[in-house]
Length: 299
Ligand code: RIB
Image (cartoon, rainbow, N blue to C red; front, side):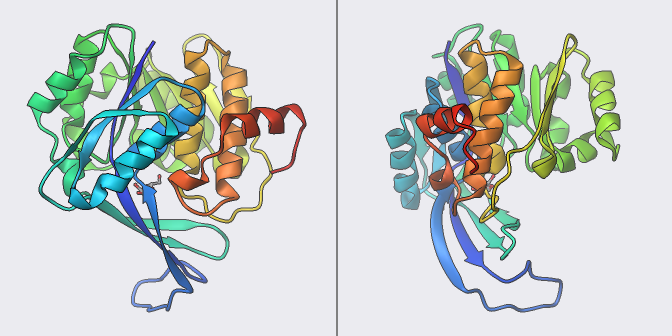
């Protein structure tokens, strides 16, 4: 089984600051780091490191060639990453001393996908293959429709949740991966159990993975529900923790592991990512994850 991750590639400009800047406030940052990122790229790197056969499709500008190389080096197939004449997408990320982040996105090349490109990429895949999407590129609704028509399993991480998703028929999604904030935005509910109940009501066919930061994660579908505690970790930079979780969870599912095992591996991998700086570069290798879980190693 193959997985196509059709998603963003960003250059992350990460500023370390004592606290997230407030409206009207100016803070001088302690340092600036430039990292490879983008929810799409991070999730492909996590999938590849976790052992999945992943193809990444997306767009970069001339300044983004290094992102393609990083994706390739992680083990992902990059033949569907194309270059266009515009700037690569980028993100301005504030990371506070507590490790919390706040992000401004500039989509750039990520919004230059065309229906022709989508059609030609999908031609390479078969019914039963996975199609993974986030919400940092254009044509999400078209991708969901076409992926479903083809008989692929459509997986959506609706992040960031915004008006671009209104054009998409979310009832066609087979599996959602959401955090608490996205859960509230999609359902209009505040409490964890209410979010889960509302997701079941609105999307009865779909599985849902709800990540809750330091409170762990929950998987639910029509048959089962599993709860996973978060591993303790010292938060250095939470950027890409959710992407790491997504990649490791899906890779475990593709290997035929049960949901409890998939949640365990994803949570441990995400805890490692939180303990390191950067996005794609903070994603651990599979051996670290498997060894750490087996030896109950504190991250
Ligand atoms: O999920 C983290 C990612 O969100 C960052 O790498 C940044 O590029 C934004 O897309």
